Length: 423
Image (cartoon, rainbow, N blue to C red):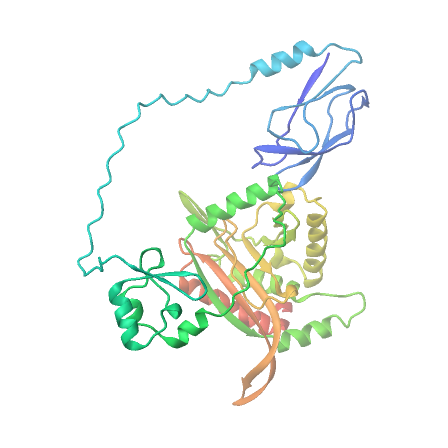
């Protein structure tokens, strides 16, 4: 007997999905466990396997189509089976949305008569303008008073720009006449003739992009953000990394150092490692750090769980694996859930400092900039040094300014003295 396959809910926040690619076609034999299609959710593109056996009789959504969860995706049954009634029953069982009520026609109201504006309380030249014919055959309209003043001042009326009605020269144009401006106004201007052609491209928003936009909008406008900026001396961290990477088959990045240092600092400041809910605040005693990873459709945040308990090498390996999965759309929902804090690093792009939007329900996010060589003061002397700027965005509902500042002081101790992370 034919079975209906509906759009699955592949994550806890998924409300609709997109068929990225069908891996089977109508008429194919399907075994339990076969991958039917790739479904794009709000978090990743995931493989959807069949729990039924038989022949693929019907495909309800074309590739690229979007549909809500539980919509008709496909039908699997016996070869040659009639499924018309099954499709009709499924569609009729759907709750019809109420039709939009047309607004009632409204009788046109009589148009109100707009009163004429009152005349400004100032003198107005009402004498009919004098028409003057120039040597070039053009016509200049000028008021008699303006013409009289121009003659008295010896001004050529052809060089005067009129500001009156329809370009008429009036008294004030003569009184405020400036020969230098008039000369520049008479210069030949070559008009611009557009040669280009307007063009644009519309790109449909992916499910991931829609969800990212909604969540970031909610976070930015619901959570009262404030920002704390610091600049750390990176000389010791650079020497530490160089020595650490000199060991064969060992390589860590500055980001790995920041992640480890942040995790250790969060253990000492659980308020910054907290989460805000409408009816409570949760202080997390475990540290799961989300790492923001840029992908073509936006931003994914894989989670390094129990980051404070992992070694620098383990953190490096985990971040590298997660970032690769994110860029290849292979992250599973459970690999992006449960973060208690987030780090966003744009240093590799040369960005020195920036602010980030908090990944709710977390209470804070750390923005990490590039390491910059610059003059610094040490022991009263200006010398060459290396610094890195970090910005902590906090939710003021859970993290007060002093709390965030104390967290950054602890983070500073770990990053500027990285050997303490190994103790």
